[in-house]
Length: 315
Image 1 (cartoon, rainbow, N blue to C red):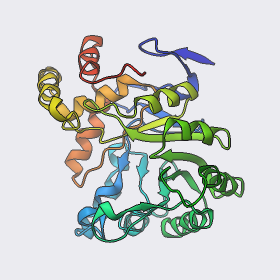
Image 2: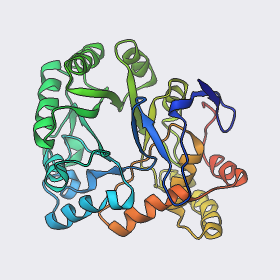
Image 3: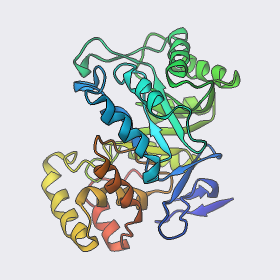
Image 4: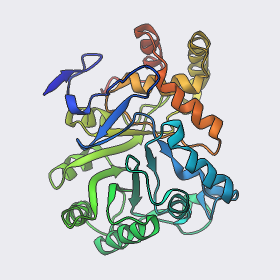
């Protein structure tokens, strides 16, 4: 079954449309047709050391924050083996294992680190390495199967992209992966991957000021794949346009008794039914603010004003 998009940009599979529930409860979105999660998740990358290197300095505080997430309505946590590296996955296991039945954890493999500086990361696509990455992530997380596993980069040149996706598909067929996702890929790579495996989710840069991922979002909408935008609450990604972004969001935020960052999140949910933002935070108060953004009902005029801040023509 198919339904029209909110702004008539095309049809969407109804099982991927955002589902709004009773007042006071959070909207949900479904990954891969069978994993229903809250429409705003939690990106755990900040629960590491400086430059995403080493363990999170406030270990007990990190445990408390993770253990509080589901009380705030969060049912989706995003991590990666390169966060730490490895320390982020271990912290999640320590805090939450055995996991609540309705919690979905996504992790990623394919990036490596060359040192403390996060810019030293690089991509490895060797299928044997990808298999090792998944198996060690499963061990660190205490899982037999990961619900959503991303190829973390399409930039690797040490193996054909088709072989990388093919290895993920093989591990899915073996029961180690429930759904496959893609991060840091082009639209062309996404289309190649779809010819090899079902792709349930993609990630790319997309927010109020920067729509770099607009073409990948359009492809995800066409196919019903979930789209997780990078930097979902950033007001600075507009570059020289950042002042205009802030000036546009300020009165809208004031009208809703919200912060501009909450409005930025609310706009993403209004913008597409396949959107699954995963803002990160080290503060429980900030997590609560983020989750509250799901209840902000923007008017069509407010949505249009925010949409006009950056180029969405390709959508």
